[in-house]
Length: 335
Image (tube, rainbow, N blue to C red; front, side):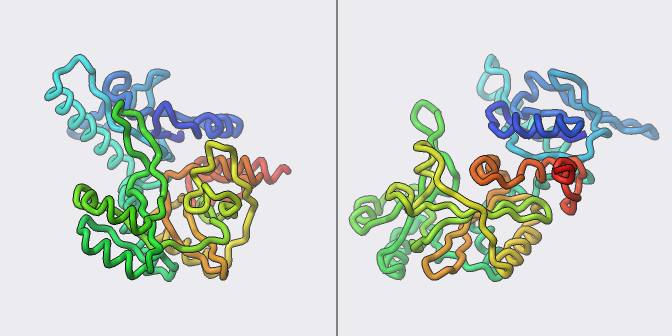
């Protein structure tokens, strides 16, 4: 059985669930924020008897012994009963998260996409960059600080060519709704006007690197799928191609990643302990490949939709076979 750890708003669930169902896979979907209000968990330990563990989902009971693969997709923290006092809600969240973390540890011997410890560690951008540099990938000059003088000095070292990006993909509006935070060019007048704000929170700055295009490299086990995104066709997508998503898909096409870059990307994944990841690269005008980041839980179905590359078939096959060295998907062997 494949256990999917996710949330109700995950847009990838439906195509993945449909593909898994078409292959006859047994699947249990666990929206982790439903625990403990709508989901129960039982862990039983008895002297000289067989231990037992179960997840009581709205659509049935899952015996933990039946789970062979865990897709650590996009779990969210537990949500307590809103009728509780705030102090009691905090207690419930901490107790519930302790149970979830304990359950994940009990499932460590199953096949994870990705292992929860590795996924958490790899989600930190400074750590990614350190490991990427150690495997020989080119990275941008980067500064993470809340010291204003450090930022001013870095701006000058970059010749005034600097960008700001957030450590997290989203911030929140006053009403609590999420909003995307895009990569932004930092001009001298912007820096002077906002310099004091840097002391309020750590900021990530990088040198601005000119682009010919951008690459989304999706690594699924031992397979690599690369698409080239034409981000330079429009002014509003030149710095961050994600700004163009709401206006329609950007032109992208399958791309063959140079062997030396692919080998280093794979070594990065190995050292991070990941079997799946979405990696972003800049392709410079002089054909250098500069690593930006890897998302252990990145979106990828849009790449298949726009390029026709069979990511869904390969990803679901890896889940079913429970190994990063999975064989060719059955539906592709029939083609």
